[in-house]
Length: 93
Image (cartoon, rainbow, N blue to C red; front, side, top):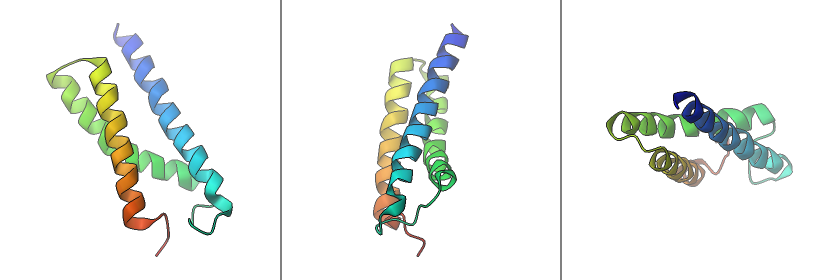
């Protein structure tokens, strides 16, 4: 059971990171962002997903429900992504 939960969480995290990084990388030719490489986009997605994963892990110790944990992680990821965009507009300055 734990191996199955680990696999589910790992696959969803990889989809979040690689999928989000791919869509950020597609903006490389746009003058709206300064993201130019896939590595930068992946790093940004990893930094955004970190707090969401920690919060999800903490709540997993209290009340274990895989659906709620994945929902919380997705919600915090989306909220963090919006807040980072609102603050920086993905620009260097």
